[in-house]
Image (cartoon, rainbow, N blue to C red; front, side, top):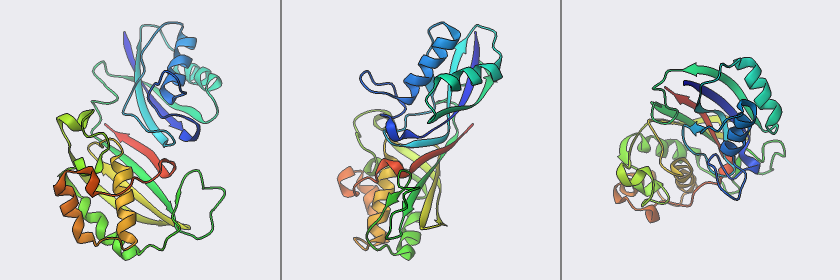
Length: 247
């Protein structure tokens, strides 16, 4: 039995997210079905982690096992022919037997895009959060570094009694950069792992800080509270991209 690694790009606008759901269309289910149709045997596709409904990926990774001999360029062509045009297999490559798309990952990079111009851009509206209120970018730049380092991020995760947060809510955020882009800014996150909705919850809190709802100096207290109610509303999904999974 051989193991293969997939690198996948997708526009999450029309999907319930990565993870298989019985009554909705997901990225994982469509790719898994395409693989089973092409290879003609049951298999499980394992991703590096779930992305929520409406969230996009430039380079999601996943793995599957098969004992069939594969022509990888031909398999990629077949899968992309079966998949809808907003999901694309970028690369299929052999992986070590002990490679695991989720557990072998050392860090992940996410980007979140904010549109700050008063007029919406029809060409980016599905991929940015349009902020109508005035933001103080000096406050945004002052607040972002306060999230860096190793912390208990319980205050910035949803469903704190489920999933990985129950066993280990500690994560190390090594980078949170504020990058100017046309008509807005991009927040670049890199960490050894992310809790459920962690990036969106941090982004929502940063926006409220930049809107003068509270000073940056309150962020350590929000982290220390380990209480989701102390942070602010999550940013919407459409501005979020999984950019890279590092192994």
